[in-house]
Length: 134
Image 1 (cartoon, helix red, strand yellow):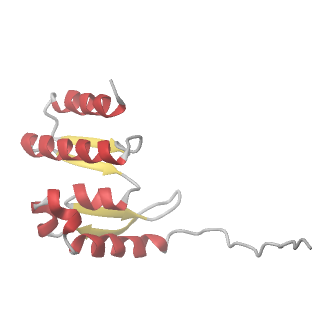
Image 2 (tube, helix red, strand yellow):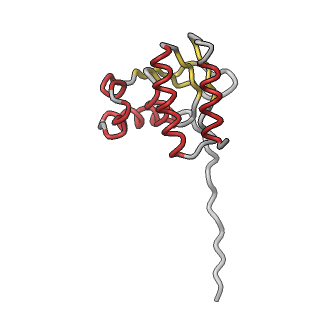
Image 3 (cartoon, helix red, strand yellow):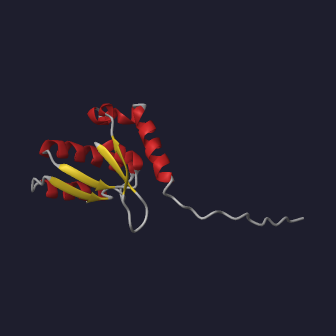
């Protein structure tokens, strides 16, 4: 089985137990973009059919907005706490198949990114010495 097929099987195995809550940690991280999109669509369809709640951890902001009713942003570090909560607009939730084409999608992703970027501390780059060759 391919990676995508294995992922579908593992999701189906869990949903066969009819859980009310499904915990997923970076479930699609190892999949390429095309397979990820199909698997995400499958997951959304199955979760809706089973009326299950999914708590998903992801670092992919677009994925979070596409699959969630609500995005919870945690602060950075060992003492992480809830930094912000974003409700995904109804227009995006009702038509997930076309959410990427909706103008609200990039606006929400940008709001989350702006909030997230406050948490990111990158090392300051130092000027590089440039050698000239004559």
